[in-house]
Image (cartoon, rainbow, N blue to C red; front, side, top):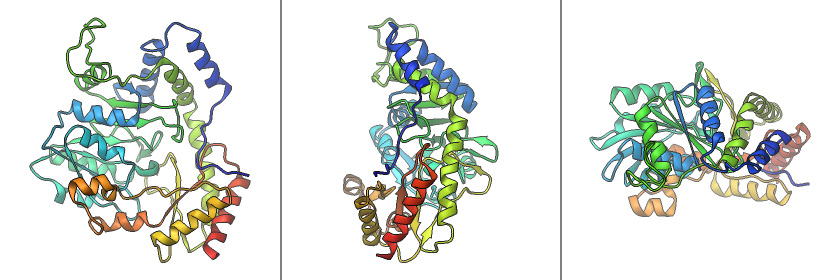
Length: 371
């Protein structure tokens, strides 16, 4: 029996919604696009939502809309998926890394201000694995230093901190809808903002630089084809309508893991931070004793040989070969991140994972430690 790392949760409602679009003449730039955007803005509580073809595209458009350009610096985390940093680089700016908090694994607010220079234009933090801990403090730092705050919420749909929803802390925020996320559109993303001028600019940039008033062959600026089709949007509308059910399913799976692994001192088990209502993206445990890359990788290999998919979320961004080569980063630059990255094990995690499957994963994990 194979136990997968992630699986989307698609019902007959999603299939029928997609089929309805396929039976219509409106496959792109049709009514489902606006319906999805309006529903998403209502759910998060922002004025505007702009659907795009990926979270990466959304982050890039935020950089462009905010006027980030070559010579600028944007502060971000080295413990994340690569797109948080490459979106900054795609705009010609430099990602400036700040080490993470060893508990929340988010960028450490206490270390941000020492990284601010006259070239710093924005802060782009990530709610890692769905955890918004510390984002209220980051918001205060951005406001104090007159910096744009772009919230990478691609892993955190449905999370909240002290009752404030993820996606409402930053001047702009971005969600992602890849199949392993809380909801999926196959591929896709969403930009959120209360600023009409930024929203209008993103709408234009995602659609080949067209303005609201221009005809199809009129282009007011350099733009891109980052549109999300009505097919994807129809899938997203139904998925979003199920978000509370999806959150509950994922919280239950996380609870099973926590219950079974809680008494094993060899393993650091993730939990919700104070004040956080966490919408779980993945379930990542860490080696609690003698963490090393070699030991962690041996455990990953043992579990894979037993047909259990696992992964190393995440390798340090600053040590990715092209990143180190371009900016000169080296081992030791961000010690907390590097220590954490040597110890992480992402376990199978998705809505419909059963309690028996969770028990099998945990039994195999514990046996892999003992061998």
